Every structure is written in structure tokens, then in C-alpha cells.
Image 1: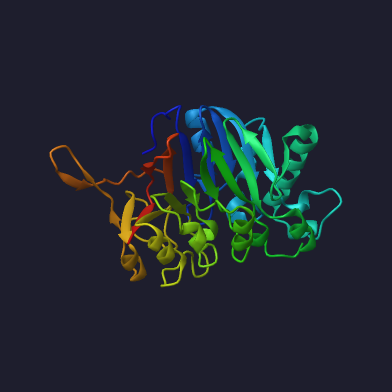
Image 2: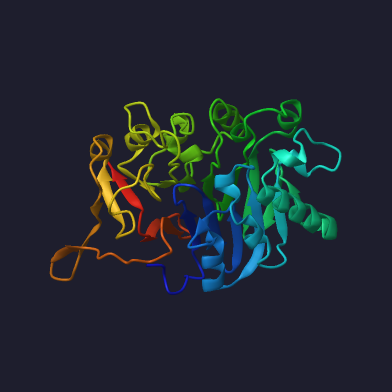
Length: 338
């Protein structure tokens, strides 16, 4: 279950990923909200479940790239109120630049483009073209765009949208949270050359569904326990895969566990309790187990199904000293262990 209230001194990271979507919501102490991308949960934008529950300042919303698994219900997020910062690097928003005809754009994406442009025109101070090295201060935090470079985007307008995806670094009290969007290699090598300390993060939303090309080994090299979470993609062959060189195997060489908001293929426990599984179990197609818990006196048990419509999420809280605690996992989520 979600926490009843939030500690005013901790930074919270909410990651939703139902298999056909992704949304990251961050609460910067004491009350600034940042939303990166949108997906549908229980027929609403995932962020609306959080914003309506806890309240606070609508500080920043970012669309990383125009793939449908990142923009579903984004209009609902924009409609929450007057966001202080609205970020995007999609050149389709430029008044004098376009390579895609109107009839090639999905109606929802057309609407989102129109709404972002309307906000930017009405309030130019909210506009953030999220080109590499640009940044915005959000309360006590700083957001820096890691990718794409504006020159690369303009010189490669036909590039696959993942290669134009906006990766972001959040810095708070000297701590780093890395939001990888759908950036794939070889771009991580270039990013890490320009921003050499990214491995020293306390939390990371793993890029591109923890795919082979989304996981970059130098980012996994730092010592110490860190919170890593990825969202699945369950179309085609599904992501992540569980081969010996795929993302999950390499992540587990860096630390003993990471989290998935769901699996790339359906299983009969996915709408019940949060689950866990080892890498080998997932590789062999075994179904996950309900996460166990320990009661006072040493009694153990398994979490009962919650039957909640709000599912496929993982929530972590970070203290100013860098301690990161997973405070809640929703139905459908899986803790993956070595």
C-alpha cells in the first residue's frame, strides 16, 4: 500500500510501469512535485493518483520523447494546474520545423503538442527545451538534462525516438538520482564522458526497460547499495530479457537486487501481492512468489493480495544522508534477486 503521508524531510521517487507505459513522479522536500512522462493506471494518469493523494506544488513536468508508452494521459497531467516548468525536446513543437505530417501523428500526441505549445506561449518562463547541459532549479533540487544535445537532434531529425529521449539528472543535497528515460547505447558512453560522476548515484530509473542497450556497465560500477528500478515493455518479444548478457543479469552483478514494476509477460499473480523472484527463476519462466514478511516474534508469512486498481509501482524514499529505503511496492511489481 502507498504511505498515508510523506515525511517532509525525505525525497520520494514513485515509478509506475504497467507494461505499456512509464511515469516517474518525484516529491522534492518539502512540497515540490516533478513528473516525468505519463502512463495510464486505472484509467487515469498515474501521476494524478499521487498528486491528488498528497497535494503540493506543481513544479515541473517533462515529456521525454513521443512514444506512446511515455505520453498516455499526459494531457491529464498538464491539466492538473499551472506547472512552473514544462520540459520537452521534441522538435515537433517548433513553429518553423517539422518532418512529420499532421496525419501521421496520433490524435493524443497532437493534442499534447498543442497543449504544451499553448502553455509555452502563454507563460514563456515555464518553457524548458531539455537540451543537454540545460537545467532548472526545482525547490531544493536541480534538474539537468543529460541528453540529447540540441545539435544532434537538429542534425538527425529522422533518428529513432529513443536516441532523442531526454535523460535527466536530479541533484538534491549532494545526492544524485538518475532518470534514464529510453536512452540507448552508444549514447550512454557519450553522456558519461560529459558527466563523469553519474555512477555515484543513490537511485536510478534504468533506461529503456533494462534492455541490453539501455544498461551501461560503467553506471553500475560504484560501491554501495543503490536503488535501481525498471519498467517492463510487453509488446513484441518484451523487455527486459533474461539472457546472460541482457540488462537484468548485468545489473545483478553490480548489486544483489533491483526492482521491476512488472514483468514483460503476463503471469497469474501480477494483480495480487507484490512479488519477488531470482534471476534464474525468471530466466526459466517460473512465476514469482509473493513477497514474504516477518511479524514480531519471528513469524513469517506472505503478503495477501491487495486487489487494488492502482498497481505496478515501486516507491522509494531518500534521506538527506543518502539512505534509500523502498517504502512500498504495488501489485504486479517484482523484486529481482541474484
